[in-house]
Amino acid sequence: MDLFKRKIYDELLKWKSESQGNTALLVEGARRVGKSTVVEQFARNEYRSYVLIDFSTAPRAVRELFDDASDLNYLFLQLQLQYGVQLHERESLVIFDEVQLCPRARQAITALVADGRYDYVETGSLISIRKNTKGIVVPSEERKVQMRPLDYEEFCWAQGDTATVPLLRQAFLAGKPLGDQAVQRLMRGFRLYMLVGGMPQAVQAYLQSNNLEAVDRVKRDIISLYEEDFYKISPSGMLSRLFDAIPAQLANKSSRYHVSSVLANRSAADTLEQISELAASKAVLVAYHASDPNVGMSATIDMEKFKLYLADTGLFVTLMFKDSEFTDNVVYSKLLADKLPVNLGSVYENMMAQQLTMNGDGLFYHTWPKEGSNRNYEIDFIVSRGKKICPIEVKSSRYRQHASLDEFMLKYSARIGKPYVVHTKDLRRDSALTYVPAVMAQFI
View 1 (tube, rainbow, N blue to C red):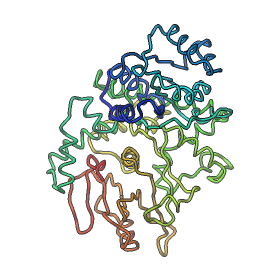
View 2 (view 1 turned 120 degrees about the vertical axis):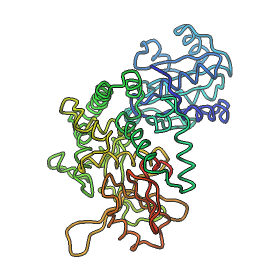
View 3 (view 1 turned 60 degrees about the horizontal axis):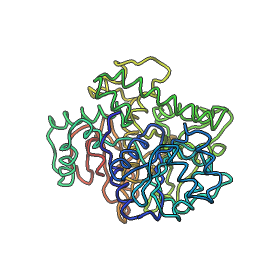
View 4 (view 1 turned 45 degrees about the vertical axis):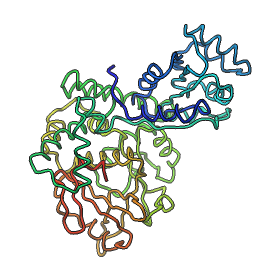
């Protein structure tokens, strides 16, 4: 696989410089997000030598070395013999890949870091990293970093484009419109990113084939892997069914994920553990309802009112049509040409959730009843900026209609910083509102 430039590499460099061997680094993320690739690239570039122990394939003799970490001289000797690599004090890295499959190795980090001879990076996928901590002492010497799919800038880098995103950032900060023709061109490239997604294998398939059907096949394989992992953890199929229903639940435009429509005789209150496990998988994002939208919204969330998104919008698009063959004219060509049906506007909503998460924001939304109606007003996302909150409404069409946002601004005027409408047109200000093209939404 091609080695794509990833922003997390700079975080690995920062950890190496700051830690100086005093902590191990745990790189968490969903399957196939590129953890092993970037960590091995880091090891190859920044160390004199390295040992990569892939616990999904490591022989029993290697696993058993970590049952007793009292004799580290023996452990290091055996690792060097097993992998044919000479380790050099303070110049070598040991990688525990898929560390969740060998809990004793993770527990040994305490002794290994205290020994101080080498640096250690662990990688872990899905929620089994949490499931496999029973009976072991989780090391306090472990620093964690999250790895996510390629963001839009990384996607541009993969195509040799280093200019677009910095120029977009400048325009956003200056509040300058780009012009209709420029926005149409930029949005076409951004919609391509939404379709392909940021999973490295999918991006590589696109670059090699320029064929969205080939990309779709790769994404279906990744979704199947996720479902297999969910079945291992939840043999009843509960997690897989909750996962598979995410696109349909968002397309319904409901104010929450309705568990009872997916799992018979179950409610949100009955599945809090399962929702937590989906979130821990890093493949799923959870947005919680903020009962009192203000700075510090996490203190006012309703755990039983939530929405689910996929961490990668490219996978979201494929999951929408998982039970049918690839149909280019249904979504791929229509989204690329900006002719997406209204009921597929959830693709843009999922992308907004993904971008906010990549920026380090928690996901919160807010609903309240309309007077004299059985329907609700709803704000798609609310983020904290300084001492104010910024409501965000996502529009794939009819962007001039934003009754919920208007009412929210009246109701909470003292709390609001900048309200945004994310849409498919140019950047502009209209009274108090800022209309942001989706390709610029990453800068909110």
